[in-house]
Figure 1: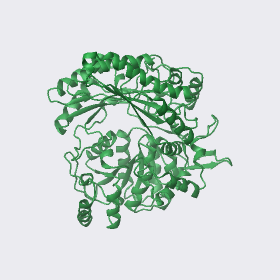
Figure 2 (figure 1 turned 135 degrees about the horizontal axis):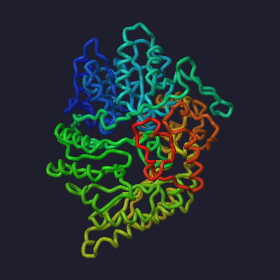
Figure 3 (figure 1 turned 120 degrees about the vertical axis):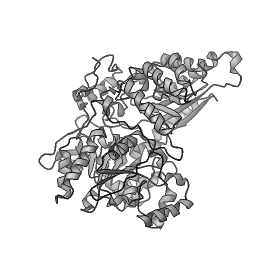
Figure 4 (figure 1 turned 45 degrees about the horizontal axis):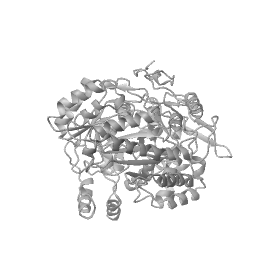
Length: 617
């Protein structure tokens, strides 16, 4: 280990941002390993500054390290310059805390936040010297597991990962370590350990399922291949969210990270039911933390970190039922310390002057809203349940309160979209600009030019949404719509940014693909694919070469409309919301009918069956 440390540290003189690799940050956990301790490598398949912004890593890292019998260490994907140095000097992938080879850990876990990180999972396994395919691993190799939102549809990684954790990890991760502790030294083989995990619930083991395909490449049969394995794996969920684990001592990086602040998770789930949003369904039902509990967590995090900003974390911050009381209590402990309180994920239909004034107490943060679609017709199709008047009213409040820049997010390529809907984005942005001009008094306009940033991403149909059966636009269609929108934004006060269409296609392929994509990932890795979410590295031609080498047509996954009667590659996962509900919502979308949020009227999605959630009937 010391040889690796010396060689590793020597590499730092020759790379960008060496602070990504040095470790020993304030708040990091260092344990002396003994023979009876278990080791878990928590891997984030992206660079340090992205991974250290992820709340899930903070939770599970500290939670596992509070166990006396477990060592949890962090692992991040090295940037290309560091990876080249490591390969040149024979250095495998190492953990942050002890510079230990990742291949020597008992369990290596990846969090899957985004489909475009899959190539980094492959690259990190290779750099660690771990056999890529589960079938190639033996008694001396670690178990590879994955969790996070993409683990609900695990099939593209089925050939590479031993088991997947479906749902929330605060309880099940500890149970996994208990099972491993009992299995280790028992003389039982790897499959017996995996079978023991299946009994915990929420664990999907791909090798325990057989898949058979029809001649047209759709799935003919997807069945368990041994007794005791369930046909569907029900997700794990924390029912008592107020009392579940929350870290109050955090690792404070030496360098700036993407989200360089305390993240206070106020609730999980969402009441809204936007038909394109996977997170809004897989995290149901809504479970809130109390104001008292949140205030206590906030006070301890402030005391233990020294951060100058705190962000409220949820899918829709302004939907927290005790929002005003919470903000008042947090301001009592942040304003005097000059700690900025930010509220991301605000909706345009419940933004107020009072809320705006409160979040400006220390520093004026940026304001971002997501109308998602440019016309009311299309907003009804996607069940956004906001009106143009909501956005105009909110813009007026913001401009009147001293803001002169607002960011607006939209999607192109949504189901039923027409060019009139695309044009509606430009027209809506112009109305917001005009509202700013007329709201700001003439005597205050000098030096306060109003501006709007319009950003569009391309619609990616996701599993576990009413739009999971939808095709994605062809690349040519995506680019034509983005060009049309750009041509129709004529105000110099509107800046337009759009997402890469090639990346969006690949995201759709892996969002909806099956286990045959595993070999595509391995081939793409051999061609040099990695960091595909970064424009610096993404190479569309290499991916097309990998698809061709494996006789896979990406259009089959991305651009094909799926029938309701097809077996879906993710049907093995039970998120609590049945397919019948998604079919009903899909049909309502094409009828232009909206579904009210959960507090207004229960839609009978089924998620309340987990218990502990709030059903707003």
